Amino acid sequence: MRVAIVSSAYLAAENRKNIDALARHAEIRVISPDRPLYGVFSAAIDLPDASDAGTYALYPLQRFGGPFHRLRSADLGLAGFAPDIVQVEHDPWTALFRQAARARRRHAPQARLLVLAKKNTYRRYPGLAGCMKDILARRGVAQLDHVLAASRMTAALYERNFSVARDRVSVVHHLGVDTELFAPGGPSAGPDAAEIFTVGYCGRLEPHKGLEDLVVAVAGLRADRPIRLRLLGEGSLAAPLAARAREENWLDVAPTVPHAAVAPFLRGLDLFCLPAHVLPDHEEHDAHALMEAMACGIACIGTRSGIIPELLDGKTGLLVPPADPPALAEAIAACAFP
Image (cartoon, rainbow, N blue to C red; front, side):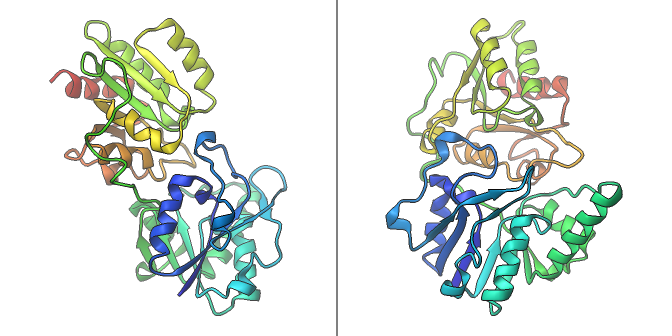
């Protein structure tokens, strides 16, 4: 069996372990832009080298403003590869999905078309823009043979909004976790880890991740108990958080590191928090760092945003309302000072 995967996710070296696992069962061709589509961790990007040329086909990215982009290729290599399955990891209303679907229709009509969907919200815009999005979405979904939904919430969206039959939807998490790398024990990164209860987060340092709520919660708990907060990542909040860390010895903000170094960071924590917000057109998609922390045996707290309640149920971790620093502080205190 030959499977073509249209995705930018595998520019990150750690994510390519998923392709290595799939390649034990099928011949895989990853069709990817030669650079990231969106802001991702700079340290995580490690482009495939010449030895991977048979598996990874990188094409120049053409941008048309905002979220509109396509790959500079007429057939995306499908004519020569002749896949049995084309799996597109872009939403059915995007330009990249339309390009992949068109290439499959013209150059690999024998192939089944799948989408691996992470997005768990669908915002209906008013006016012409909303009509166009709906038309593109429904045309895209109509071409699909199957939907691989990264969460139950995403599966429900396709069944509810696009009337996809339940037997045409499978819930399959997007990326697996290397449980040999992300495992309890082993080396940890963090000074004085045994002396002060350490709360942490790693990922994008952006407002919708709820990091300001986390800072407020930990700062409030410090009034009468020793506790500290460690953050790892990059994003628009990196500079202001780092500036505060220079003034507050209980807060540490570190730049992103190669993915293999994330595991020691997580093992240096006593508690991992993912306090993601709920926005009109965004909820937590895959909570990958949360799964890595869980694999390391770290206690976890998350908010009721997107996929998080599917991973934390009160036994595997604690859930709190989003954008609620007092509730977050109470949950942290329950873990830190039982």
